[in-house]
Image (tube, rainbow, N blue to C red):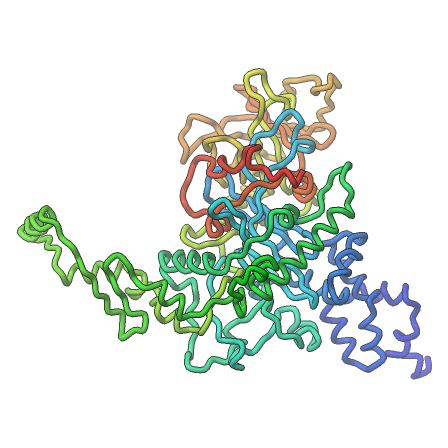
Length: 620
């Protein structure tokens, strides 16, 4: 082969359809490196068709929808950059509290990704597929014109829905924890901040040429720090300080979106709805959010003369320090000649005699002891936690940040062991069904037979979400059904409970108790396995188990039957994205609790938000 027919010239002379097939085998980073070889390959790699193929290969957005995404973005390359950056966020995230279930599903929206909470609920006579699933927004990440990420936390306060702009830190490819944090930053107009974007750094210089407040990640290594030599991590602060900072920042950066333009977060999946109408509404909403992200107010607020923020995602640190000053008679210096605290302590007559009596018993509540106790309890003191004034001195401004990181987590039966004081969501490991593990994945269902049909004394049935996974134990293959959501009013089984455990290597000879389905058709039981199911009445912490069998029925149904009681839990495989697109949107909780509900609760904390009166009718 002649030299001019080899190397780059060979690629340059390939037909477009062959070139696309070749480049699909490359990663986006490889493509950018290829473009650095010569001018001809640089022009070839810049082709829209090449990057359209890369977007399609990711499998996040259907091919037919990518053209609609492209209308709001500068190029398919920008879309690809955004999708690669947020791809690890897609999937199911959970938290231990409330025990009924705290399930957040992150899925593609419209030129965005959206985090939606599945509300614990009952299923009516229409069943899971046709009955609308109730959900509430948690956060969304918009793709701007250049492919950068713009974060909006969702919440509801004083009977109004708000969005809370912030930044998205560089997403770890293997992230398993999603943290809501507050990040100190240096002022951008002082030349102190060196900008970089996570995927931009990996792809090419073109991705990082535009300085934007939607930086997908600005880490400590990216900052040129002036008078502060070190950054204090948000995680090192005491819980009370972290909560206080999150409440303060969300209260200051919140923006209200007009109700008419805040009804849809993604196109609906309904046969009687024109999709183009949804796309038009979503496009207009996206433009409005991008303007609010850059200007800090809606057009109506600007007409009314509202004060504009130079950067709506950041607050002046001086204002935060002022608001963080100790109240209720206690004044603390954040500027730290140490952590000196002056506190005016009022004592009643009863308190005086109580302290005197304790003094006689050797348990004096002396002033020095009080100060020591205060220092330990007050979050800016002690050796265990970082001092708050040091954190506040780490930058000139402060803002919300979503941080997806990878940490070492232990787990039990596919359920992660979670930290009880972090504002975090934890990713569930989802494994695709393969030969020998055909039942892996997310399943949903109800108790009773026929499945989904209400009884005479109860109109609805509690909806259960179970994560089915496989585990090897003593040479045997176990199928474990871990509960992640239940739609009862008061929890029966805590999150992470194994609803049943089945030995896949041991067939069951038990007959299925019913011969026909709800339509009278004869059932075809393909196979059955022996196992044990969780037992009621054995205590909440150690519920115990009773023998039963798992039946694999036609049309992809699973049914676990308790041998003694003949109770049956019927399951079907779920596609959450489709269910949410046919579902009904509900009002969210206040922003911080809406992201991570840390209070231990055994009842349905979403009950006030999950009735028809609170449904956003515009979503139907």
